Length: 144
Image (tube, rainbow, N blue to C red):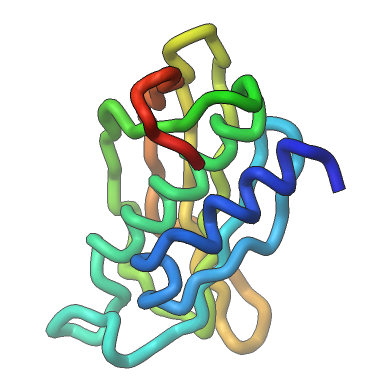
């Protein structure tokens, strides 16, 4: 396991919100992270679809960790901004958030993410797209 992968795993293990949701890291590579969330009835909105806030949260985390994987070892990551488009109702047996780097800079990293809903029969559809900006943070006491 690379140092960057270990940093991502250690940081994710500290993220109580992802634990609360039941999300788990399922893929880590340089500039790429996937987070998988099994369907849970207590995470849906009034029509039975995964709540948009939950979808956005797992996409944001996947993108943040993709950015962290390329940052210096002594840094932390924070989301600066992101925009999401909900493309389809989020229904499925599980959801995979994929975070990918568009451009990594010294301080600012542009990321792209998507959430894919996977049905019980294995069919899938993209339900959310994210475009965001992550910031490299150093020297202020934050640690990942």
